[in-house]
Image (cartoon, rainbow, N blue to C red; front, side, top):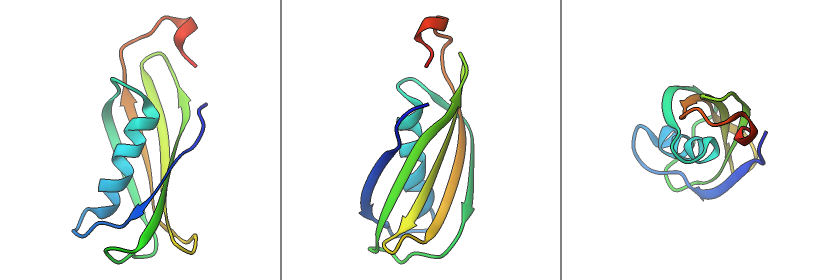
Length: 99
């Protein structure tokens, strides 16, 4: 549907570091005005605060009112630290505007 968004950053301190990185990029992939309906996170290997990570997000599919997006958080050596999927609601757009 869309290109993969990619962000390289440092893993934040705190109990919700994965969510803090994945949710904003998922929302960006879903597009302006999209409101979150559901967010599911699955965890892999742990990452320490300050470690370099890569966050990727993309849209799997979209309807006129819903966007289904996925994301993953990779450690510096490419190991999966977390993955997420989300559903976003958006205002219905005319069919020709939906991609």
